[in-house]
Length: 113
Length: 111
Image (cartoon, rainbow over all chains, first blue to last red; front, side):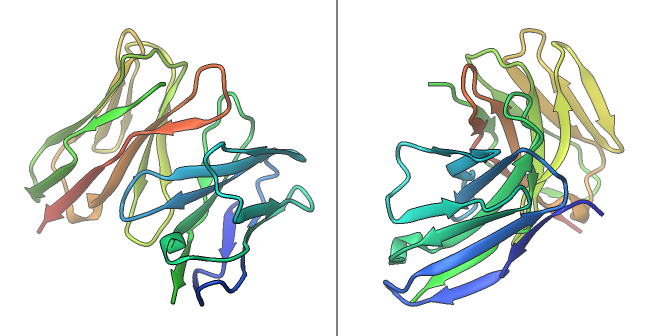
């Protein structure tokens, strides 16, 4: 089945210790998104890739970086996690940016100790 | 700034009851999506509505897009515990590439 996969599902890191979250998709979609979601709030967009074109949201902290080495994979790097970065991180894909029905992965729950 | 306002924020009902969730905006959107998110999981797309006045049905769920494409509603008939979750409406930003999400309606259906 075509899908969006996120690994790991649960990640525990220490304050200030870099962490990488991964996302892969078998949908062959052009667009991949990373969202941060806290406490049943709406997902907050961090950035998205349209093919290889990276688009950062203005209010995304510099602490968050992303890589998309190919169509299928996208990574979220948190360089120095703080306690406030503890959240659910959601990866999503869409076929294009205009119509943008999004298909979400199951998320990675990040805990910062 | 385009916003989607959902109401109610929280709803707790008994199994078998009917309910309606609303998603309102002062902006016109080209389309609107509804997602359901269960605890610890990612949102799952339920439906996309595109045409003003459009009504779509998904089993016991009925979705309607307002005539002016500024608002939408989700009606659940005879709610079941399996309907429990966070319901999010979302729409593509006009002139941009961002998806705007409502704050969500958290539904709890008691057996």
